[in-house]
Image (cartoon, one colour):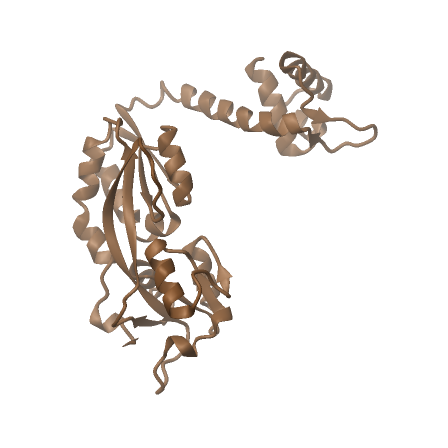
Length: 301
């Protein structure tokens, strides 16, 4: 198979039919059809289900599998074409869960790019388990995760611990807030790790939630625009949210919930010393995002 055949296949999948794909590639519909048929012959599988009179395409089971391979091929071709344009000494890929990348490490990443301009960077967000897999596959160099997993090939280090606080979008009143007074069906929930799940189960009777479970802090911020919702979130996230609106930030005095961020990397990766050092040099910046000032706390329970 060749690049023009795979390019034609991807164009048809993305556009939904051969007519639109031909316009995107500036070639005839018959040429598109011929390239896909040739590809199917070489692979000895049917990639696209064909029905008389139906213009939209439907991938076969084999077509769905090949689509993933074609995307990987496309990325490899893009990377190859960039070799001459990007004369970088080193390529570094860093992955983290959304709440760490966007609320704790965003400024750190900006700093390390400035400190090491000869390196090509790829910053990405994934779930913790996905990051483990990406590092095991050598698709990612460094990961920042919340959920632990046993892996013989991965080094795991505790990177920081962060306090969790209760946030509410409502005016403070004379009656103090308590966990019992919260409507459990209006909780905005993210699993901040094993220790948080245990804390949640102890205080609410269950490790999950009766409310809305999300996987990104952006959605929590959107829901908090409505007064009935509440969430237990990291200090770094709460500090960022209060830049947009007045929120009550309620600290837990006793039995304080925390989350632990772990830094992970492959034990055989010898390519990380400079970046690892750059990240550690930003400890003061990180610590500043993990601490609440006295005037940022509405009350304590």
